[in-house]
Amino acid sequence: MKEPVFLPVSLREKGYSLVWREETGSTNADALEAARSGHHAPCWFVAGKQASGRGRSGREWISPEGNLYASLLLRNPCEIAVASQLGFVTGIALHDAISRLTGMAAPRLQLKWPNDVLLDGKKLVGLLLEAQSMGSDTNIAIGCGINVTHRPQGVPYSVATVNEVAPVVTIADMFEALSLAFDSVFSFWQKSSGKSATQRFAPIRSLWLERAAGIGEAASLRLPQGKINGVFAGIDGLGRLELQTDKGMQLVDAGDLFFPGFIV
Ligand code: BTN
Image 1 (cartoon, rainbow, N blue to C red):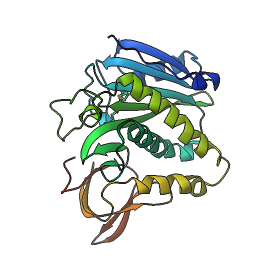
Image 2: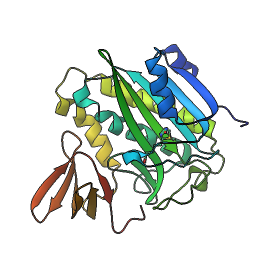
Image 3: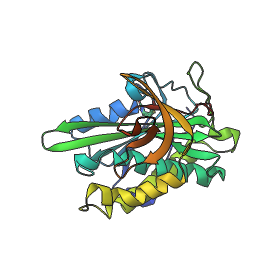
């Protein structure tokens, strides 16, 4: 592949590093495997393509050349009780980075609970957080798959690419913007470490809700035990989905959210 990515000098000076591979199985797997061998963190693992990209809920993430596959390895970034907040932190960073490069903002560019970025209602980014314990340490891989050039085929939803609104943006541009935006939102979130989980989440929650897709819209939630229909009311102080149903407000930790009027 002709175009490797570069880590901004300001991030190298803050202790971040980068491992680039033309091709790999999964950058999340690379990050967690490196962590098991004592690799230092924070480190970005980035690949030109993935042979076995991992999606949420055990799904495959189709990963041809032309899109960005980047996983950040963090070691003990926070208490386990607030680790899921990292998904919202990263979602805001992804939104900011893509917005900076494309000029897009909400409502065209939106976040969909829990972890997707949508462009015009179509999936642009998938995010997968994975954690592993190693002795008293917790390693976390934050994996981001961003459709820059290529629109993956054979997926059960509509997809968008960065290049359809910003044709000259490259994966190198995307990685630079993402790595800087992540550090900025993460540093902001880290300033509130030591506070309670809800106090920590409050400013991130506001930023997330400003960018959220489908608030007040009819929605259905697919869970392993079945489907629940209702109205997407927002997220609570811990990031749980609030679904207003005919049985009252339901709070949900994890699941797949669908909006009938949306394409995703
Ligand atoms: C989703 O299902 O929406 C999440 C997809 C996450 C894909 C990214 S690509 C980089 C990283 N490596 C993986 O194997 N998965 C994540």
